[in-house]
Length: 276
Image (cartoon, rainbow, N blue to C red; front, side, top):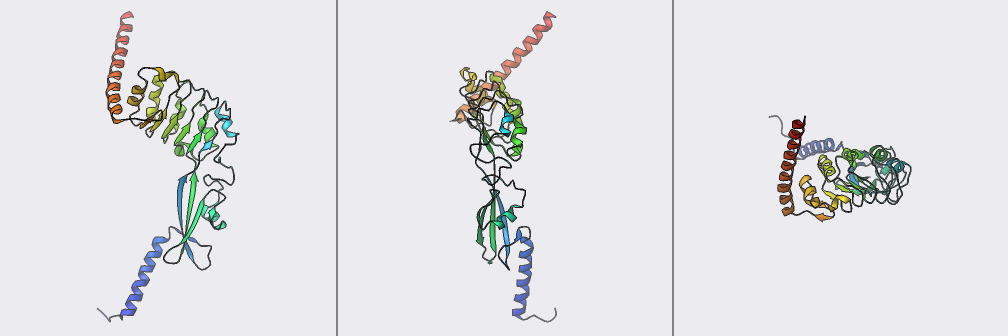
């Protein structure tokens, strides 16, 4: 009801409302642009950076990680580099300081123009998710977590791949279980003797790739079927893809193995009671 608006006035009003709605939806990503008179849009992306490489450093303890410089990758607080944003500055502000390319924090900046004419700035932050500690002299992983905290951001959350091959480790230590997002764990070429220590890795639900070859446990006749049966989530063992047939056979075998082990434990318990 009421006077009808001319078509041109109605179009102007509707266009204004649509513009307001668009502006409200974009507020979460708007940042002032370095281009005068234009409001820009900023998008933050995260990608994995190169591994921190501490291989062949003759490390004897995890504490030495804190004072060594990596062969590649950049440790936390290492200054301009290809790592995650460590400078403490707002990554968008740093991107404004650089006219494109890589910022001092390792954020990669790309600029383009939206169809509306507004500049779009994409900031990519590189985060370290992998570390190489292979070919050292580590015989224990005591203190691994605090040492990694000093060289990378949130290792408990971010660490997905760790190479501990060719050290002097004698068991699969509980220290590894702190890193719940581990997907790949290399332990080949160590001195691990007890096959049952593999059971600890069941507490790493995302583990997909494991290497244990070159350890004394590899010579055990049931080695491969035991590991595959114990760690149902594995997709690769010793750089060899686990087949569907192996999974099915190992699942059946480990079930029977555990039942036999339980029966033997009960028999030992009753035998000890009879002796008493």
